[in-house]
Image (tube, rainbow, N blue to C red; front, side, top):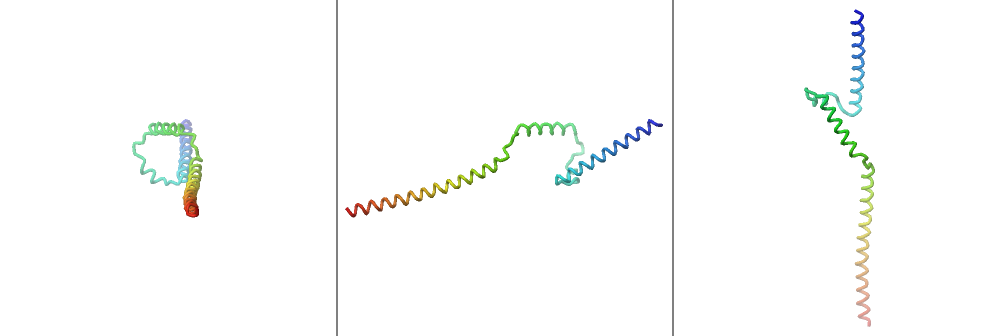
Length: 116
């Protein structure tokens, strides 16, 4: 009889541990911005936990292979694009100045030829 009580007590403790774990999972889901019911709809009835663990392991390996990621790359690219735009405008200004200068030189040449 005492072994049955011990077994029942262990089962109750296990049930409480599962309830706490379920509550923690629910809190993690809601903190992640998700709702439990829509997620449960997408879970198939014949869930293969071992298969999911294998897939998770494969995904973790793929993620570890692409690390380290340059987190500042987007900011650096934006800075380089801004610099290129600035330099492109400088090139356009220099081209315009060259045309004006060539035009002025031609005008001076004509006036000099006309004067002498």
